[in-house]
Length: 309
Ligand code: PMP
Image (cartoon, rainbow, N blue to C red; front, side, top):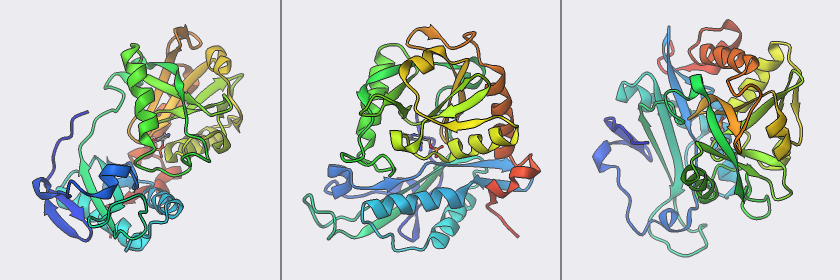
């Protein structure tokens, strides 16, 4: 999806013009993928722009950085302030936010530890990741031949740049085969997550998603939907899911910051349930939509205002 440029990008403490936000071609993160990042969204609310669960996203960024032994030279509070400032400076109320912690230029080789640690934050308006109609019509998914990276290969608990080779291989294969999205399995064959989304099924009235031990990213949207579903009185379970559970589910959906919540209406050419977005999926989608826009008192704690008093 094309990027729509905004005005300024925050690079290690300075705002620079969008077109001047450059790094050297010998930057080691470009070569070896040693970097960690986040994908966050800000939404327009009655109180202006509010970043959805910003504190949780920044906490995950620092957990990812810890796994990769990168110590950002800013506190989490400083980075939260910098993210809000970047949204404010660019005057984009509703936007996607991409912070990246990466290695500085100067060292080369497979030991990242001597490199300096840099941080950038960019924001831009970004539509629905799986397509404008995806929320209405749902998407077609396939279980990929590519498996999710194992914990002792590239830990899936981190959101690291290099690990997205795995996601992209699965995504490209799915698109080439005519599907909208891939679902990856863990090395032991359990369903893990989509290439950039968590996956849920609804079966027997229960809302079920794989446990983190099966390798999905601990999605912030996943956690939000689990909370909303539980608050609606549904039994929410983290349990192993296998391919046939997907085929036989009453409903299925993806969750993620970029995609938001998207019904899955077909998996490997089998209709999910009726082959149309299911009622529980729609109910949770509506509530999530309202929660992100600050319309539900119960979840207002998730709306972190850019211009707070
Ligand atoms: N799984 C993967 C592999 C992802 O890249 C993402 C997007 N960060 C997710 C799940 C969803 O996570 P979140 O809801 O925090 O965006």
